[in-house]
Image (cartoon, rainbow, N blue to C red; front, side, top):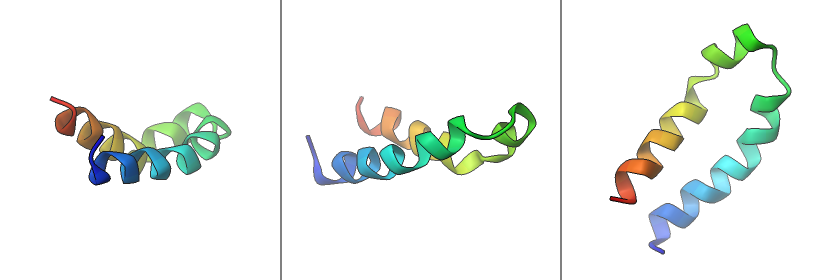
Length: 45
């Protein structure tokens, strides 16, 4: 696992509980989580 992927995992571990606690309409606006997930997928190719 590369250092960049490991950093993304650490960042997401902190953001996912916050994201899950938001109301549905606020989850759509919490785009930083989606950005990190997209970056993680692109790096794992």
